[in-house]
Length: 242
Ligand SMILES: [Zn+2]
Image (cartoon, rainbow, N blue to C red; front, side):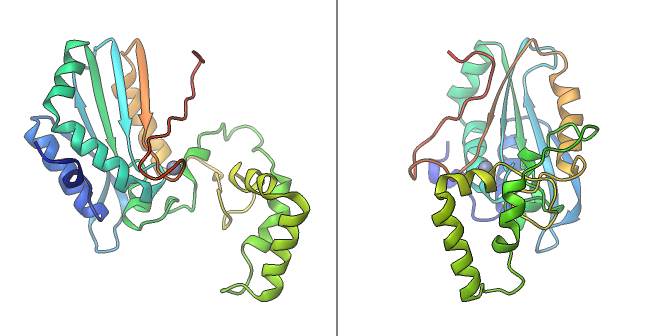
């Protein structure tokens, strides 16, 4: 069994190799969903799917990484460590819980060390009903020209404009307007897209195949960036608030 630090990689290519290797050692089949583009060094990009447990298992635990590209460096480490942790795998088997590992939901962002997909989409804001009018975010639209100034690095006037908005509205309101997601500025921040992205379509196809027969599904989607460093902050979404 490898130590925790050894489970973590410094690049997408290394992370993928470690994940593929850990799945092979565990005797689990790899189902790569290959992305149409390549990594920065020409490497193959894929959403790699590994399942432990039968397709008709009543309970399914999904563990996914790399929704926000670069954050996959952390999520991959958790997945690689779990795959070679015999005690954890035996516990899941004993509880009749199948485990579905989804490595690199957004492999392009992971490999290029950026948050968004190749469509500049912030992936977890891309799961909306595109047949309906898309959510408006006028507060972001007002900020957009200041957040993405025509010249870079930003001019002094731009910095002052941003500080002015900060003083007028407060950090919390500005943060809420920016991170809420927006669907009107394809070159902007936290852009949700105007159609389902490659990652969205691929993930849905995988879930239709892997999740259709489960009676109960739990999902741990691994991210980084919130909470104190080194601390696992749990953000819960579900029907049962208890
Ligand atoms: Zn994230």
